[in-house]
View 1 (cartoon, rainbow, N blue to C red):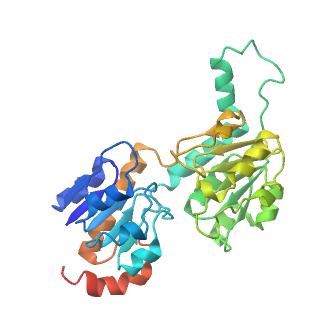
View 2: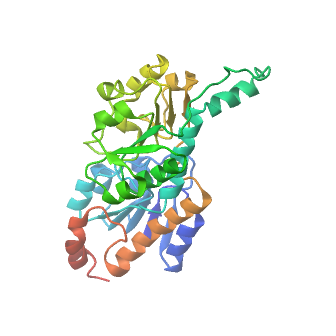
View 3: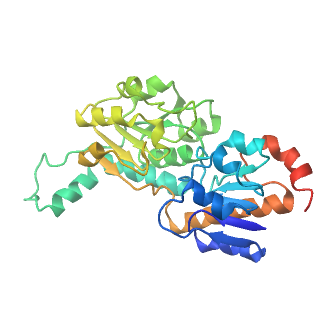
Length: 332
């Protein structure tokens, strides 16, 4: 079996494939791979491991005749045309669960950093502006006793909320459906999105990007936030109307924000770079040695499982399972 990987990944994932005597080819350049390069290098591939930065659309999918599975090196899969993959009888897999704790850590770190002006204070020190303790210097906002609104009560949202509970915060959440275990474990209450925006002192986003969540927080929604509120996004940049958020941050209508993802990623709006009341990270939510190795292993195991058991461990297009097992994989 031939496997193409669109970027260098931790060796643990590659080793798993090679132990199965799969032929592994890795695109090892630093920059993102182009669509034509994907087609060129993956033309004879039975499987590909893709990154969230790879736009795997119908143009690419229809030009890979041997492809049986796309294993995404991420939980989200908005970068893949699922409908096209299903039409071509190609399984799509993702890597949920393994990056939960690391991403929750990052979201909580952004919450603290933005709320307490940590990065701004660091710049203040490095620029030689510190002349001694002052009673009004770099005042931020406390967390204990404050309300945190969690948008999305899935794995990462739950892990993030647990960290907030440990800091004495009150938790409310917005989700498509009621999450009883979330409520019981965290003494949390489900509310409407508008109420969450109006009541929360801190807001953290933990939902996937799709047609229903694109610009979920637009001009109208963002304007409902408290002027003292802090917004954190470690999900997908397009969930927030970034230009409208920048306007509110510039005019101090929102106290601060923490970003790990951006609407025009990898490009970052220049206006964001000028603001002191933001913390900007280069999409490092899951960037720990342990987590990235686990993601690599899971992405590879999804492929192996497809060829051995006729289904990936974590799959997206479930409608293909029966068809794929009977027709596509009958040769194994």
